Image (cartoon, rainbow, N blue to C red):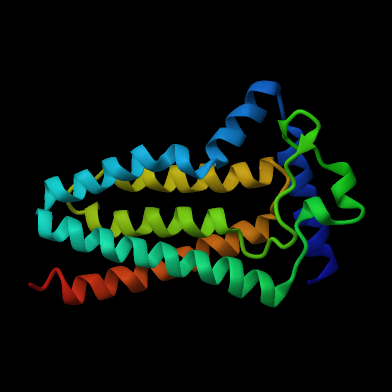
Length: 193
């Protein structure tokens, strides 16, 4: 990566990571915690059922899980193990400049070893873009809500000091691309019937 881009990226990350308070620390940890979003996902699936039919909701669920599974697997086992880019929390000098969330007494959260691309960004954008594609014509306000949610989850990863901005951008692009592909297949196979 070009040195000046690295410097800009590190400066942005440090600025995001250092704008903290005890409440924001807790909130960003909570936002970054995947299981708390399950009721939100269920609500979105109910919207698909309500706006379409049970058949479409079931098939959308199948394609949605397949898209998330594919995107998550490729992000965590394809990209991360191919590029082997250390997370900022594992960077020898930058890691010392960052703050980390103490999730248990004496234990700081630093994430896994590699960070490109962000699995959280990938998955949140897969989910957001899948639902946007499905619901945008039926519920106009769904687009800004889902984009805000995906960006918030992604931002939380930088706030926690475990991803560079480029990890997030890469994850958002990959997740969006996977969502477009899976929704295209869903549209051509299920929605035609």
